[in-house]
Structures are given as C-alpha cells and as structure tokens.
Image (cartoon, rainbow, N blue to C red; front, side):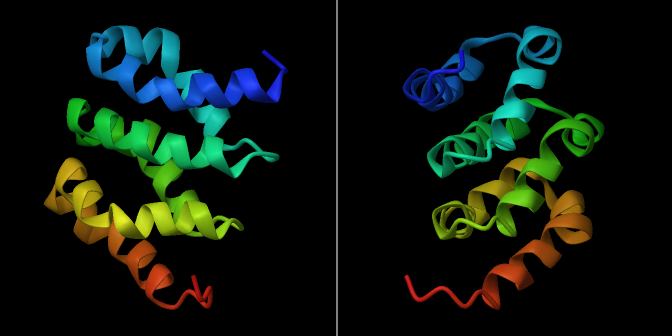
Length: 123
C-alpha cells in the first residue's frame, strides 16, 4: 500500500506476524516485503520496526539465511541517517548478537558496533 500510515502500521505488526509464521512462509512470502520496508526512505519508524522484526527472524534463520536476508538490514540500520534507527540498533545490540550467534557477531557485527560507538548524536 502506498499510504504512509498503512505501511507504518503494517511494519509495526510484521514482528508479530513473523513470530507465528513458518520459516518457509517467511522466505517465500514475506522476506521481499521486509527487505523493501527496511529501505523505506521517508519514514524512519518503518526502519525501526524492521530492526525489531530482524530480532525475531534472526532467531529462526540459520547462519547462511541470516547472511543472505537479515544481516545487511542491521548493518545498514547501524549507519542509518536517522538517529532513531541507529539508537534502536544500539539499544538492542546485545539481543541482536545473541540472535545472530557468535560467528556472525564476531565477523560481521563488531564493525557496526564500533560505528555506533563513534556516533556523534547527542540523544
């Protein structure tokens, strides 16, 4: 839907939907929508919702699936132009690391954490 309020509401409920869906349904029906919403240009609240959705999906996916579908969403969110998105990643970084596992955390997420530590936003 092109209506911003509808997209925002749908993005906020995606985490709940994903938590009750089968992994195959997510991979076939929802993953493209999730990735498109994670790159939403006009509404940072949608990108924030995608961070929370990633927490749920990362626990369901294996390492290869996470590298393919969810890892880039978090890496981009850690460098997002919106401080709200970056703050959401920072506040949930421990949960993200636990969801992705030690290998992805060590190889891929530490750089994002360093970027967050250097963030200049005062909030």
